Image 1 (cartoon, rainbow, N blue to C red):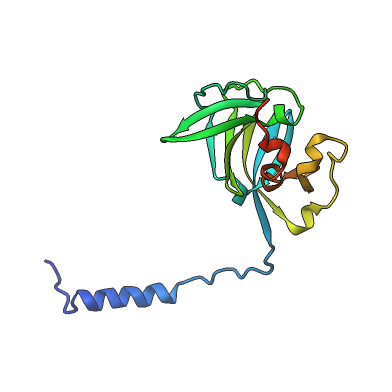
Image 2 (image 1 turned 90 degrees about the vertical axis):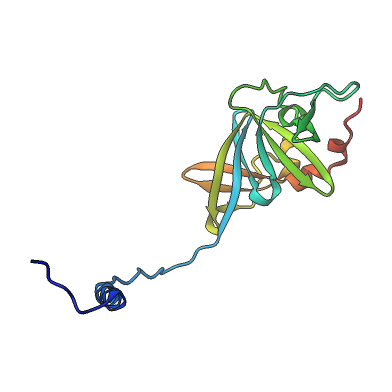
Length: 181
């Protein structure tokens, strides 16, 4: 025979709520809050770099390009991205590291800096990278290199150096803006 309860649905829910509160666990307290710097890791000429997350607008697979006549060799062409024309530059070629050969890992980092919108061909995107303040070093491992003009410092983590590549410095460099031969 079925037993009929005299309590209604509201009373049952209230009883369940009281049971839940009686058996709740406290959340662990966070002892230390550490500031993080977040960037996008990418590989260029076999070396890893990282750019500030806010400096990269979008990451694209290598698009179909239309050639630009009389442009410098590191200007790969113009891509139509969702109805917008995007100039695509070979970052390795611009930095005198040799012309990139796009493959299935190659990506285009889209930047918007100081009114300039451009795509930068890189060998590979390594995903988001997080670093703590204590990982920062002011040194520039590329000070004797063309890349050095665009490196603002380096993060060191697990024995690996991650030079910070400034897209803002690149976009404001008059040499980068001169694309015609």
